Image (cartoon, rainbow, N blue to C red; front, side):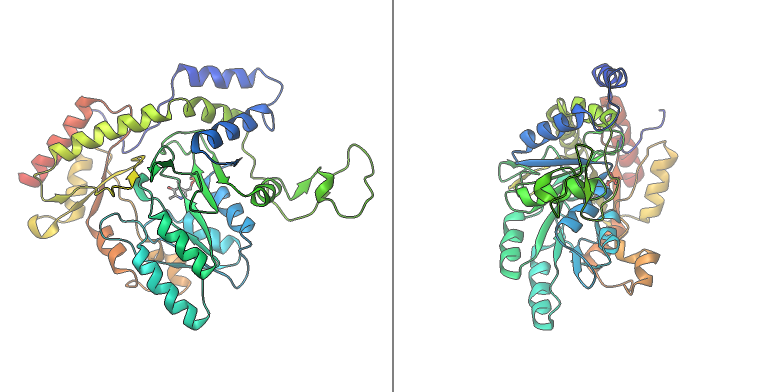
Length: 389
Ligand SMILES: *Cc1c(COP(=O)(O)O)cnc(C)c1O
């Protein structure tokens, strides 16, 4: 069997045609396709505004800036995530901290969050921003997180990079029904891709205006936002904030827009594959991904946990044996607080035990809509062979 990756994009001829059309058009960037992409994502998610940017990390950065995160502020997120979810605190000269995970969903635990908020209130160290991460595509318990945000006064930015196409309480993730903003990534490993790309959704007009400014240098041509009254002429613009160049190009947006038309079929195909894994792997000494009844996951990832006390092998041995079979297994995630950069900022090895325990047992199996039955059967047989012998 040739190499089976853990994730893979699905680009078809329609996508290619959409790209060629942009390349032959008048605009390669800042043209009409970006606005069209934003409009379609907003419609899909059932949200008022969408701002497309260069990548998911850029989206997290300006979402934090728009939330007013700055020096002296705290940002809390899950340790079981890609480092970008926490790095955005450092970008804003704020301090990141973590909330341990729920042992069944591997998402930030709302109980832990509440306990930590109660303590923080006593010591005057409440967070300004909390970033729940919808790990593997399953939404966090947003209704309860929003209730806590109202009580303790923090902004909620959903890191929904895994979760576009998923639902929470029958609403699309990204609807921001229970949050201030939600952030997506369109990296090729994610549910849909634009090559590189990211996007922020919000229902707040004020937040939307801020995000648009921060995306392009803090520059505006809109007189409503200008200072003073000396409009020098039609060429005039003002820089009123310090923004970045985080624009997405029309080329990338065209790929994203074309992919968006197939998002539901991608997620359905992921669910089919997940059901097959769940059925075929049920008797192995592993823990399958547990799903909360309020959620319909986008299944960006299929993660299993090895019941190590029933297996006479280490996680590393199982992982290496799967890799030796040409199966591109992976591990999501090394807890962010254990990274050297974070240790240098004072996080010790043993501070979030659920995330660390989960990390020591987990393996991500290949999952992507183009995966064939033959490929999946091969992965299933290899895992059975390795775990049962
Ligand atoms: C992919 C990802 C990001 C970053 O997105 P990029 O587009 O790669 O910058 C952030 N958070 C999570 C949880 C991700 O999976």
